[in-house]
Image 1 (cartoon, one colour):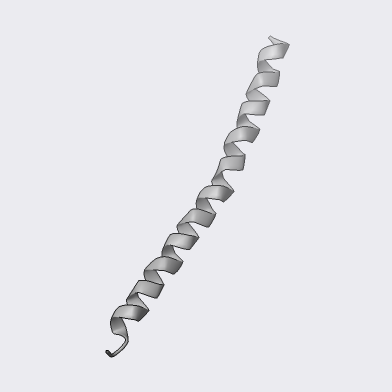
Image 2 (spheres, one colour):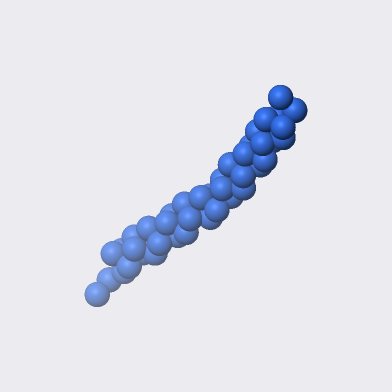
Length: 44
């Protein structure tokens, strides 16, 4: 049973490492959306 506990600790660390990458992608999408709104508001 001690070996299973060791694997569970590694799996938990792996999932936590994915979250910051997703947060960067979401922030980049917000930046692109804001740039599109500025382009639409600019007079031609």
